[in-house]
Structure formats: structure tokens, C-alpha cells
Image (cartoon, rainbow, N blue to C red; front, side, top):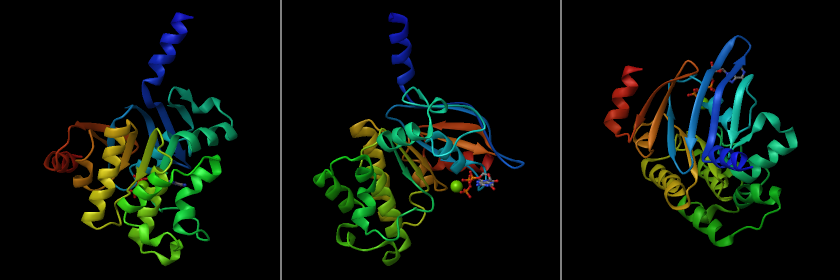
Length: 246
Ligand SMILES: Nc1ncnc2c1ncn2[C@@H]1O[C@H](COP(=O)(O)OP(=O)(O)OP(=O)(O)O)[C@@H](O)[C@H]1O
Ligand SMILES: [Mg+2]
């Protein structure tokens, strides 16, 4: 019994753990035996050339996609052992995801889009937190707009707000600042940084921007579906150097 409890406690100390994860599309090995652990409360950036597998990595780590081989655990739970319904529920309750292509629902306005994960999970909307998040991403006066009536950057900010409004244990964000001006990008990065620092959430950020990566506790470099390097306590200059050496 004691043994079991110790093992459970040890397993859940990691927010997300991938072991030998492989994902192939036809003859493309998008992920090639990747093992990595995201500690609870850590903010990790993922960098790598276009096509190196960053989005695939995020989608497998978050349970949005199933690897061909290997295991993914979120909070100690092996996703491979869950059926579709349980996996969806775990994702809804514990994971926030900012899609590279935003994935907003066209027929819903900004507020409906942002609170959709709460509605789906049957959870109450924390109005104060909702107001804070939409204010900080600069959308407080756009809540009744539909995605088609927003700029690309505004759509991106709505996608960020949607991922944060549930206060998920793990936030995966796929280039969440790619369409933003520097000031708005900084506000989004600050929100992600605070998610890790103030509420102990685990943040995984894909970015091409060394300035964004420098907000993280560490940067993981992907190349051709493999993790090839890690940089702890990154500075902008160090990220650029490491990037050039890839
Ligand atoms: N659904 C898919 N079907 C076929 N091939 C895919 C699919 N998704 C990704 N790939 C391939 O897998 C590889 C990794 O793609 P991925 O989207 O993970 O790269 P990325 O690092 O996120 O790139 P980017 O920086 O351009 O977003 C690419 O070679 C891509 O063509
Ligand atoms: Mg991508």
C-alpha cells in the first residue's frame, strides 16, 4: 500500500511526461521517439525550424492526438489507457490549448468562444476572472464581436483567453504571439508567466521568437522530430546563439 502511494505521488509530481513518443504521417516521422518531462509549475518554450514537429509534439502531449508509439501521462494518468470520452474529459478539465490557427467557433461571439470550455464542462463562469483575462488581452470592448469581425491578433487573443479562463493545470500554446504587436505579445506572455508563478500552472509555449522564449524557465529545441537541446534560464542572446547552432 505504502509502495503504491509513494509511486502515485512520484508519478503526479510531473505535470506531463512523454516516453518514446513517435508520430508518423505516411512516411513522415513528425515525432521520432521523444521523451520529455514537464515539471509542475514550469514554463517551457519549444523552438525548432518549421516542420520540426512542434505542433505535433504539443498535440500528442495534450492528448489532442494519439501517438503511434510511446506513452503520454498528464498528472500521472496514462492517456493511452483512456477511452475517447475519458480522454476528452481529462483534456477539458485539466488542459488549456491555444491553437496555431486559433480554432474559434465562427457563429459565436468573443465571450461565448472564451467561455465555451466552461459551458462544455458544466462549470460556473468566474465573472471576475473572465473580466480580468479579457481586459488583459485587450478584448473587454469586443465581447459581442464574432471572430470574422476581429483582426488576426484579436482572434489570437480570444484563443489565449479561452485557454486561460478555466485555469487549467497545463496550458499548451502554439505560437500564441505570432500575430501580435510587441506590446500585446508582452501582455500575453506575462499572463502565461503568471499562470506558472502565481497559480503553479504548467505552461508549454511553442514560439519562433527568441524574445518570447526568454520568458520561459527553459527552452527545448526540436529538430526533425527529436529533442536536440535544452537551454535553462534562457536569455534572448543565448536563445539566438543556440538557434543558429541548430
Ligand atoms: N495531419 C498531417 N498529415 C500529414 N503530415 C503532417 C500532418 N501534420 C503534420 N505533418 C507533417 O509532420 C511534420 C511536422 O509538422 P508540425 O506541424 O508538427 O511542424 P511544426 O514544427 O509545428 O512547424 P511550423 O513551425 O511550421 O508550425 C511536417 O513535416 C508536416 O508536414
Ligand atoms: Mg506548428
